[in-house]
Image (cartoon, helix red, strand yellow):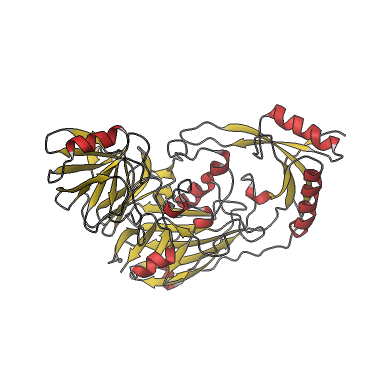
Length: 489
């Protein structure tokens, strides 16, 4: 049988009517775009508005129509759903040998500001309308039973052209009327994950969204650890991935920039050693700082630990492994770092922990005062009013992260200094498709952001207002996450 190129899908589906709601007098004071939605059919979205109070407004936005259906995707030898042309052609031949007709689809992962476009190829079998998902699942099973690994896929997730639909929650904070403050929270400890609503409730926050990415590749008991920088109440609780995007919160201001941390331990004998990380597992020869917020025992790996009091005095020098005493910090070393501690961190000596957080846009050090918090982001989206997706620098330049649609949590700052928090729900075929990275940037520009950043998304995406989750988490319920951004009274 011959193979053909699959170029798109247009299927009949029930029409979703989108009605533009006229602005009320109350809404006029709350900034919201009056222009057409930037994605899909680009109509005026339906929206509802709620004044949360004190310059804070919540909008529920819905737009688009469900025209995407299902197909079967054949997996490549790597386990991915795409590959090079020759790999895709070989897989298509396997499908035809199994008695099915294969389509080879060419897809271009769009270029971002720091990474060129990428051409990929997918192998697809069949097209079914949204209501016939079961038929796609059955076809995928038949192929897998024939020795060709495959799965049923919703085409709205692909990241190519779609009509939606989309459901969003948008929280805007007017700096002229808002009298509260912003803060970050890691919950009860760095190691433990908690829900956004739990962290919001503990601080009696007006609103909150989930924060940055957390480490799913460490011990299950430690997976609250942020991937990248975290500062809470002026205390550095996780080091930066050098140069990655982050949001700096101070009082009622928010600023997006790129950060680097530099830390060192300085013994009273004048010797110095770089500190490699904060509140995470270390590797051989690394020196790690643990704070009382860690919430777990330090690794018992045969290394050494210097327990420091609040003044930097060494109150104990011990073999590694144990709790962090309240009001203390621990310098933990393995290998060469352990040797340094045994030689230069004797009991009753003083060891200074020198901590610098550098703003790479200004080259200046950020003063870690009690009103400062920092949340690490996933990818920068907008810089100085222009879309600038820094996926490669920020460690998310894969096809899955740039092109595929997922639920998103987005943060932006307007020209007047206002804050825009948005959640785009996804992974709900026929209800809401989410957004890819380029679409996320387009949405934030539409919402008036001149600086914007992507936070953690997927099943982590959550917005809490008045103690309630107002979006639809894709896991079916709220996921425990590493940290959260809080809007406080």
